[in-house]
Length: 301
Image (cartoon, rainbow, N blue to C red; front, side, top):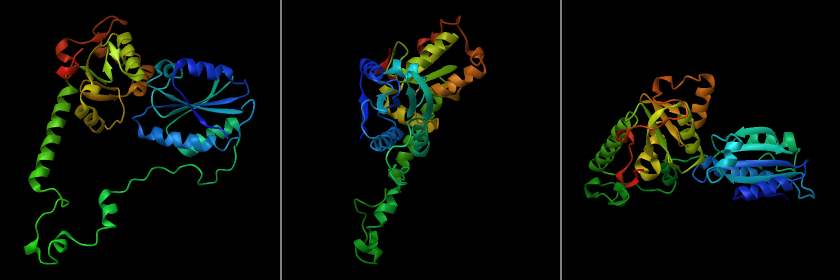
């Protein structure tokens, strides 16, 4: 049966692709280690791959690439979000699929490569289902805290280690959350255009961040930035604050614009999208004044 092959370098990818027969369908999956849907996509593809027999030459080849570790390849396929699937044959892209919808992925693969063996209607993994922690624990709990500390007589009840947090502790957590939200509100307005990215403009730590930095430079935009890799609190907080799970994230005028794919779409539909924020000739944009480069002291560029 076929398997999902991990590609770890650009040379490996080039070698593998050029070795394929012109009739071989390549299923190229782009992922990142931090995105949960990518784990689901990996399971989907491994299940699909196992339904196709090994042949010489192969009729289908499944490849898996880390989009951030191999940014040049990601950019060549215009990957702006993960998981992202490219179906290719003889150097020509036949179809692209974004997201981890098992039925969409399977339909696309079978449309171009034919059906593999029968994996059954339940052969592909279902969507992940979350169960509330209290529901799971409630199945095993047969006594109430009061009963565990003295039957139904609550006068003998004393808080245990597993009891719900007390009001002062909950108030403290709420206060910390409010402080973080206040900080994030200030950060997104620290410059007319604020970029929350992995790394710094001079040393981006992922291909998506590098691409958006290049776009802002090309548009002549002066912007502030924040390296989310240097502050886990901001990194996790911005996902909720923006209601956007990935980075980079771009703000303009204190309002959330979106990630790389959204910024690309905005520029395609309106080339003057950044007209109000241009402070340099096109191709010469870059970081704003030092005071708007909001980074933790330990990560300043």
